[in-house]
Length: 178
Image 1: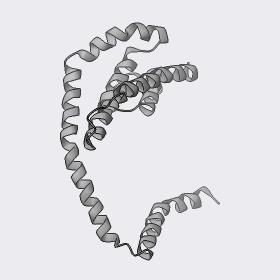
Image 2: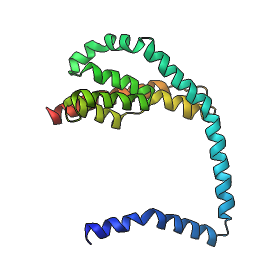
Image 3: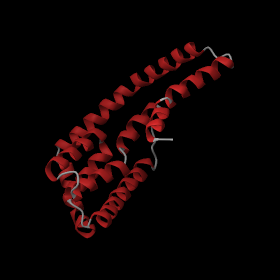
Image 4: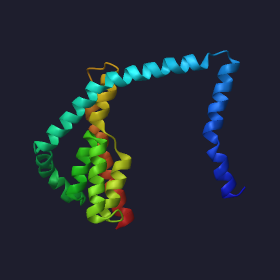
């Protein structure tokens, strides 16, 4: 099978899968359109419930960045950066990534514009973006949308995972790139 034929067959995969699901539902006697409308209504209600949490997290991120707390945190953690030989921009990106995905993506684009995507810091930023998550966003939005008020160890473990991602990204990119 040639790559052209393979690409053509993959382009039919999703429509074919949808057709199979609809056909199976029809055979089982499911009123497909009504179930779809019901699911869409539930999705819309969930989206409306999420709006206050989204506004809250974006306001919090803005306050955290503009207050200078991020810069203070970077200065406090700079001795660790020297030990693992990581640039301060990488730590700043890691902190912002825990707060906001779009802000971290914007910072990554700035790093690309300044240093280039194939530079050490460019590859490090890409690796960090792909191997970490927006911990505070997840806690605020996902936990809040289902009514979980006591996060217990979730924040601590999420931040620990973000830190592990940061250290592992620095180590891996340094081994591969340098």
